[in-house]
Length: 496
Image (tube, rainbow, N blue to C red; front, side):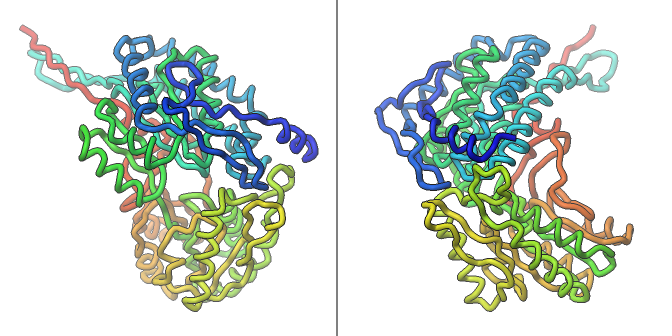
């Protein structure tokens, strides 16, 4: 592991390139406009970034469409596409320290996790979809002997990918892996809060042999570049990860344009349900702390509603209260830091506002609740635990996207299920019970895309990720992700 001093020295030398990547080239925005990007770690200036707008998106979509139509990627044999994506994954790992440093400087996460989680997961995702390319077979339907009916998957065409700032590389890879493996061309719009790794990934993809125009990156603001991409008449599908508020707009943009496919992976307010028949209450509480405070709580699947049976609630809260200070914020470039900076001042104010709302509505803050390290110029908040929360409170209803969790007490299984499902969201949930029947019964009753049993946040690229209700539609990861980026074609051949 590189020392914190060495990481600081490297950080001082970083000069990110903020220009877009279109048709295989680094380019300034058409209008020549930029926006300044500063690090949430300490407010340092990182670079001026191309402010992509409609003209830039149009240039990228035209490049992507030309690349798709002439078959430079889509028409390649699956084995040939596989080799390029395998090489892409290798280059990501080869540049792991550069990418991790960019990710940490860009959005404030601890360098140890940028290395061990973000870069590793990004490479694993691209590698897995590379391997899947020649493992996915088409079908022959069971028709009469007078016909041959072929069911084939074809690439959709031009895919627009709009990704958030909390896991910039991983979220991009979840779109890029299946979209590129299927033969599509992609225009990626990273968040204006974390654009640098996406731009660097595009360069590595070109180095790996991905043809120019197949993978383009246009940085910019959501209301400019993102909206232009979602409204573009020559984009066939949008893969969006972000807030439910913007996800609604994506559906509206599709209706206002060409009825493009829209796949939304949106917010969450995940329930973590602990029953009194689970023997190791301390383990459950420690798992909650590790999952909740990872990535500063800036995770759509953060277990921010903790439903605990009243018989074990005091014990659970006591352990959680003791665990929370272990996740005290630190400098993200220190390899020992486990909780870094929030992404910007806006997010800081949002999180502090929710903490104020918790106090105002009568919840009891038992740990944290304050801004810290303000003298650094960065945006840091203590890991925060509220007890005595009612499921109708604002902190229990709305996605906070910060290190704040709420403990809600329940008396029986029926109440636990009702409380857990009483949410507009349905992304993930967790059930803690030593009774096999109860674990299965409650897991079936919970309305969420992923249910963990006696665990949380255990994950792999082989399983789908997505949610019920206002947490979105479609699934990222696993072979099911190909459903979002391919069209099914039936070819019916009459046999005389």
